[in-house]
Length: 205
Image (cartoon, rainbow, N blue to C red; front, side, top):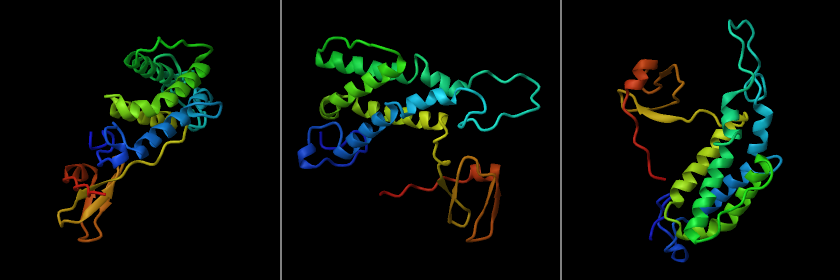
């Protein structure tokens, strides 16, 4: 193995044979740590289950139908089948790959989350070196963190990307951009016109 399976950059000499480089491994470790603990993202999901909670914004009055008693996004992440189940599924896979006994789950879901994160972090150096699906694991844990951030009100701003104006200039927009004015040539694009423009090529870092 000569390249990181996560970021695809060439590995340093002391990383050769590994599935992932050190920065990518550290990033995954940070994503795992962000999920666990009493102040972690998983614990914060419980504070955002009800309509009008901090992530959901103020309750809207005048609705013709009664609002749901809970917000579905944080609920689906907090319940079985969500964050804890995903973490446990990966831990089972890693144990089976290593020939270890099936991990045991103890306590409530928060405790199980913390246990799974703790064990995954212990095995992380091995997985980054040898597990053939480490890139998939890294991507899923990163996505899980972003989903929890969105559900708890800590989401990042809309991601920007570039499209090419008819004059060749690159316009930075988001999926929510209602329109865009090109400062280079003065062209004005509406929503549908923007979506028909070609994407700008991403420059190598």
